[in-house]
Image 1: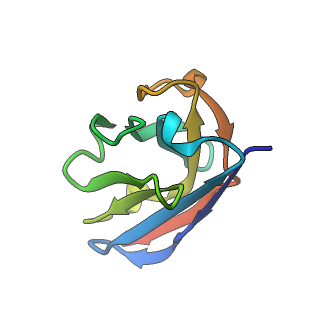
Image 2: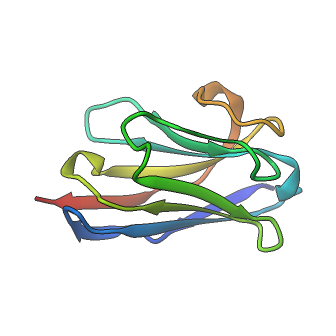
Length: 124
């Protein structure tokens, strides 16, 4: 049984930083791409960032490029999302997801397993 557990969310002022973590179990973590998505109230879940199985390929949404960094530690079965220069529009529930292949994708359809989400709230 695959489990993804996010942590690190919270309340932060605009311009601040947070680091999200997602611990994975039940699957060979290093064989699959990982992604971060987010969902704000009343909106659809949207792509934030993705990383390949080795960490060599990363993709970002235009809205977070230059501010967020995705990384992974295959020895710890953990993927991270470092979020800097946070804006109120970054407020959402953030979800990590395990991909269906080694390569990262922006499409939500390319992810098999999802965590329960962690709330990020950015105050102005």
